[in-house]
Amino acid sequence: MSHTELPAASTVADAAKLILDGIKGDREFDAFKAASLEYSEDWQCFTGFPVVQRWNLEADAPALFEEGLRALALKAAVYELTADRPEPRPQRPGGRPQPLPGVRGRGR
Image (cartoon, rainbow, N blue to C red):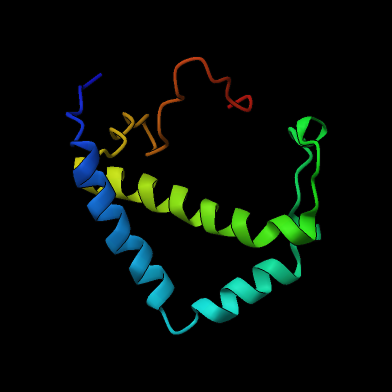
């Protein structure tokens, strides 16, 4: 397994801001945001909800949407800055990839 050098936090922050600005500047962003917030009850996950004292999906959705975008922009920035790509899996005869370590195949 190879080691990936991590960039400085300020470098990641600058890259994430550019990515986030690009997302928000897209001509389809307003439609994307409106659709995401309109159907928030369809996308909810109940992990952790019982520990939130005053949870309100309608009231909290806009802030959670914003934080979700920020998290995705940070992840994209680190990925872009490190060029951290998965290593190609060795191929078996016939061109199928070797199974990942610790992952059971489907009987092939």
